[in-house]
Length: 512
Ligand code: KIV
Ligand code: ZN
Image 1: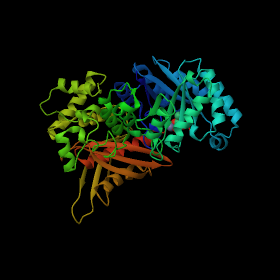
Image 2: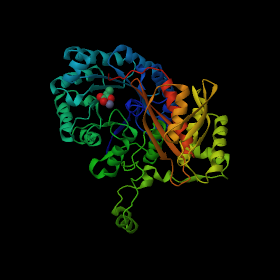
Image 3: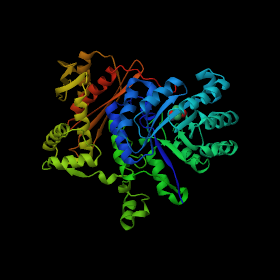
Image 4: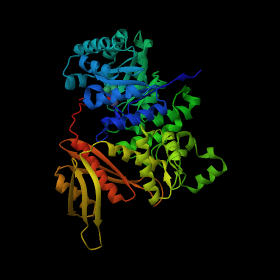
């Protein structure tokens, strides 16, 4: 009998800690619903004590998700734990995930606490958390650089206090697979009550080994939960990529012999949704979810595939949801077909009014573009939902002119807090002129640190999706805009980034 490998998704918490990846409550709810469709076992919905926004998102996700366990991170103190418990109140299945750093370096330099004080705090926090739920996860942060004796003492004690999952973290992506697996095995062997908890791994990808380390933690160390994120999103170089873990275990079931509860056909739709909401583009050669992951460009390979698929293909594109990437609707499609496709994509809108508004956008797009793909639908629904949130800046229209030998000029009309504004500027190029025009009125002083354009689908008729990253006073935000005209998409993306900068909510990073 194959054992179950628990898939714990932390896209909404650790993934959101990537600079610029912050998401609104509604965006998080959309991702959480998609994660449930993907059938992840645990959704880490955020860090409740980080901000009122995080708290509200966890609370909202707790009341809409029925199947997955909902988890909130908390530092090891009573205030954080109480906040987490309060945010999780309506979740049918809830988990409190509490952590404290245990490596000598983190204890001395970051926490400025003695090992004894850390030990006591870990113990009392798990005891405190137990009054709210039986499902308690404890992470010794920076586990892989912690002392084995100290870790053993802490872990044995927190299990005695009621921790049900022990999450071994390679916080800085320093681990090497065999050593990492052996360290977990050594701990499990020497801690007398180690079998009273499920062991988990949480790996960062700084040396590109997060997936390999996680799998070593499972095979050598005996972990039965893997923490991961969609597209490997996460702090710095990111986390273990969910799609890679799941497909490795599934494709090499002969070796790993684990069951995962994931509906793999939802992998690509989930990847696209996360990429589209965060503005973090997936590199084409990314395993499983990259645009080229199943493209066989070389003639020899194509020939092999035609003779027998498994000559060069170890997985089927359809198995991970690439089949969904097809023409779905056109100009003649009716409202019912559109609504049904929305539901299939997991984008069921809350009211008929919203469906009508999205359908009107769809018709408008279908007039300009003959083939409408799933990605187009996802993008127009995002636009529609965004138009309901009272944004401080709102794009209205623009005109732009470029001619060889002349300096490009742009005129942009947008609203600021409901009042219409018009601005004009020249620039080095059309995009520069647009951004300069917007900046001349808004005077934000933000710096542009990334500008990228991606075609949402194939073909010259494709919509362009633009990501703009702005930074100001240490804050980094991403804005996304999509349109058939990439100049318009750029203006929308810039304004979307300004809105995120405008939102002043301060968020605590749990690990600082
Ligand atoms: O990387 C890490 O150590 C973490 C913990 C807070 C789980 O994200
Ligand atoms: Zn982490």
